[in-house]
Image 1 (tube, rainbow, N blue to C red):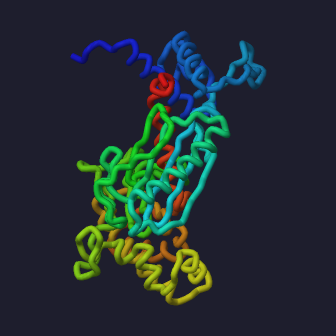
Image 2 (image 1 turned 120 degrees about the vertical axis):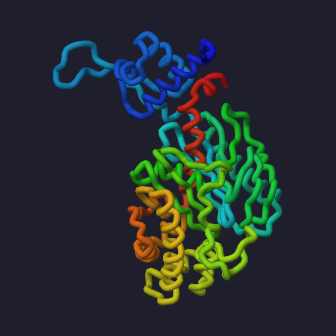
Image 3 (image 1 turned 90 degrees about the horizontal axis):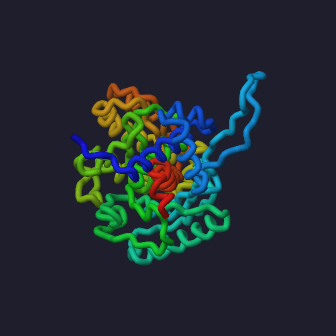
Length: 382
């Protein structure tokens, strides 16, 4: 038998129930909140008072009922969009980014710096990321938002606040220490493909509860969502699509293998095959109908589709979402992906991310907001 529930635990659980109900509904009355949570009206009043005092919820003035119904008018509860905020940071192979979202998920600040981070000392890259974070924190304070925490998206595996392995950067066991102000939820580190999938789930186009989000960048990663939850795998390494072998005799990969998908269909490989120097130039050439550019993108699409066919036949997701650079190249890439999937008897719905390259940093910022909604007691105790 489980031990007795302590008062503090019960309060924390009830606060979370109430805040989730308000977040899910968007706008809701106290009576509707009581119905949704199963809590008594008197208990709801106490929880709402605490959440309002903490700046997480705001209550509008009572308005008359519609349709001429008699009775007391009902005040409405909503998330306080000028209360808590989440800071998302992204450290990727060829750029750094910072983004702030408020409690309602609205982007309040965004800054992206294009930079090839390969070969740079980790300390130098992290110093630049810290400067981006400082600017984001200042912008958050100017908007009178309370920073709840921060999350960093990284192109590799993370262990606590350490980047344990990032092959495309050549990093291993690099601690991430940023001089951020003290916040209720602190600093978290997470794989960028996982966060991109969460960003799509929370902020992207309506997606089914089971999908695979493919992040196409210099590397290629995948985030797997099952029943509306991120699937990490036994060792938090699920979704390493970029290291699926598509040509055993292919070029050597930074992971130590050969012929990995990202070596043959990642952005660097596409640029080289198209004989262009930048993503922007590649998109311009494709739009203009340049044969070499179109062929390079289509070849990459066929390889991505073949790798996804194996994942689809194994996982049976309802949809595949093309993200990152693959979203920008979707007009020319998607047909080849679809054909390749069909050739391997895989037929998931193919969707294109509306978040594109922002998916991971949006997911990073959103993960902080989700922690506030799931555990408001920690925010109240700050």
